[in-house]
Amino acid sequence: MTAIHHYIKVYRKEPAYTAFTPYRICPIGAHSDHQLGKITGLAIDKGIHIAYGPKQNGVIEITSLQFPKRAQWHVSSTPETKQNDWADHLRGATIALSRRYPLRMGLCAIIDGELPIGGLSSSAAVIITFLNALCKLNHITLIPSELIEISKEAENQYVGVSCGKLDQSCEVYCQKDHLLYMDMKDDTYELIPMSPQMKPYEIAIFFSGLERSLASSKFNMRVDECRAAAYALKALSGAEYGKFEETNLRDVPYQSYLQYRDRLPENWAKRAEHWYTEYARVEKGAEAWKKGDIEAFGQLSFASGRSSIDNWETGSPELVKLYEIMTQTDGIYGGRFSGAGFKGCCMSLIDPAFEAKILEKVEKEYLSCFPKLKGRYSAHICHSADGVKL
Image (cartoon, rainbow, N blue to C red; front, side, top):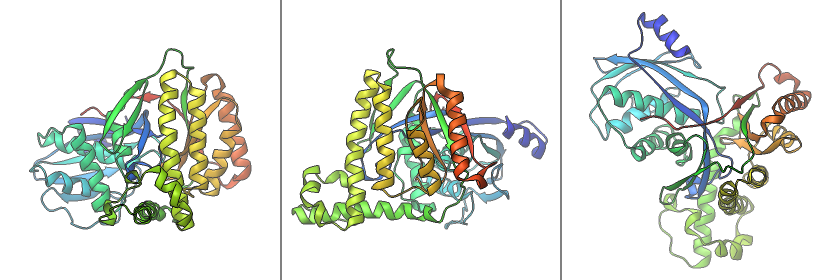
């Protein structure tokens, strides 16, 4: 493992411990969790590795092999505001954990991600991996729901990203060969096993080659547009409404949306249209998975991707092209953008018998449109996996 090798190189000794957190994909249910919708998810057999050891003086000293500069802070004096570097997620996690449990032990660590950054919930995976290590050294035992909540708090309150619990829940609850089907309103979930009748599948990840996008700042705006739509629909229908930040589309009946959507600003109506139709797609997708109908499940994932383009209005030209190529490629059951949808990658469920042809066709057609991304575009075949081991 690369993280172990670098740890030995830097600290001239073996790490005391190692840990791993998988990345996740969300075939259906994207942009739904922050409005208390339903989601589906699969953890994959690629993710974040950490090699680490204790530091008795309480200092956290951590290096990522994906970013320059080592980060340092103390468990009892973490900067209260973000420092605008890659380690802000971990500073936020340190503060969120310290609000609940006393921290005395620090750590020295090397973190390594197996795939390119963007679209696979790498930030949540890094936070969970780090928390796992920090808890072990401080003799703290978190239950899964605590780990999810602390991780989400780090992103919401410290980093300032208005995400829900989708990423963290997939990375904690998922089991190999099972689909996570979860209701974000009450955190209830079901792990639906792969049916004996289901055709075999693999998970293909296509990285666009885009690492940065000015549009990424629009994620929080989309969340606010959903809340604004919900707030307006409550007012129009005569329902009670309270604080804006506590308003969710899940609180608004679908019939109210149908009755008053024409009175919403266009963008608010589009965001709501995606949310309500995605909610229905998730429920249909769970039934298709139970029946072993991966073709029907895949078509719902494609429909989710189309709604993300038309109604959620995410997707760079590069990602949209990748999505369109996938819809026209034999052997791909379904797929969509993965992550916030402004950069990063597309995920797809594919028939293993078509793997070589799929990889060749997608790369050829994509790079013919964006030749400058040759050497930066990449494709990876993954499989479902268990969530993090606490």
